[in-house]
Length: 609
Image 1: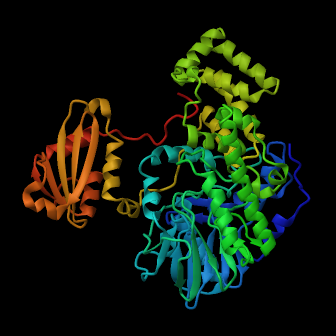
Image 2: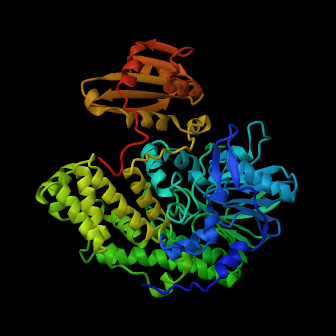
Image 3: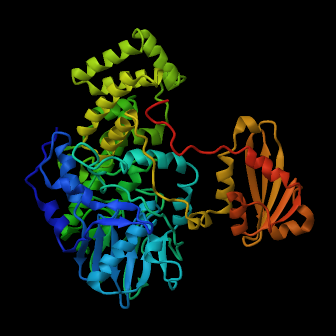
């Protein structure tokens, strides 16, 4: 194991540098009094590391727990640890530009109020989204409430599509798994949730979205907001599909978005996402060094604390670049030697000089699951072994394991035996089979919960710890539900009509729809286009054309034609009916389609069948 220098206090010095004031108490509530952020719950981190936590993760959590308003440099401030992410505020000629307004409108408003308490009641004169993940735009209405004078809102090209698509196509499953990943519903304490590596946890307020007014489309693009010059670097396909770094030349300060934080990041998050590209991530970090490395005196990111000093910035960026390049290249090297993702994850080690860097430790991502993600990106789910081509599903495998071991009690006993000898990984495998073979067996669930708890307490990775402890909690009977509100109508308005149709298509219960056939035309007047929908053989497909072209009589015949605006379409899809909508044909067609839609389960089982 790589030796880590726990005597090195430079991160603590950086995390505390520029401290102005904390939010006291560090509690944020909704208008109806519900607590959506409680920073004071982490006061226990002031103590020594207990035997229920990995010392390296405990150190990282103590660093992430530094809370309040911080001066990065003259005219640039950050609000940290009022949510999973940071909100950065850049003072301009007449007001302040907000970068990445957190997850929830409530925490963003609290952060802005903390800033104004100490820097004056400066108006918001611009906003920038560094990338398309919800913890960087969800609090936008806390900064620009309804009725606020219009201001420029900048984002990387493709931002809006990726920001909303992630919440539509697999959003239900991702949200459910995010409850595990961030452990927001776990008790805070030395034996429970101590952080997530990237930050402490997620807030549980209202997600909002103010759409961008200006896209950043190319590296080198320069914009001026409220007298502040900004030079942009596009970095698509790195930590997010749409992401960008940018440089403030007059302040010699570099924003690294989420492309270089103080942890190994994820190539594939445990909640689920598109697999990221380590090759291009390393490439863009090299480009950042070439573009700004000889100019930047300060670098900050949308998580964690800044880095000061030109040499230290380049060292930090180069360390992360080499980490990604090494993981990518060595995984491909071993793939071409015939090794599988699981095998590579067991064998690969980072070079000691890379692994010793605190910023490269696996608090949020890990070598193990990142290597498997790189394998997945290039090779997919199948490892080439025919035995794995058509395996039985989990419950059927579990029943056979139980039978072969002499029944569930014998399987549980064997699993506990492995746990006693310290082989927790295989104990989890056997006991997991026991639970799936007999999900009502209390002894099996308790034994597996105990193993998950031990694995969690030993994990250096914050999200691994949370997954294990959440699993233990649910096995013991406490089902956690996410309290994050993602139903804000602004999110729906940001969806394209294509995405709205896609959101219906992925809910069609295919077997029930096998024998149904129907057609619809949606003339969406404020879009100037007509969508032609066809349900056949259990699949809902569509195409769109310019509505003007339909007036020539070439529009395909449809069982039902709706002429409506996009807001009306959203209302119809939300179950408000067809009142006020021009409908030609059989209105029952729409009712038939709705009757064939499946309802997602926001609390589906994870640790049980």
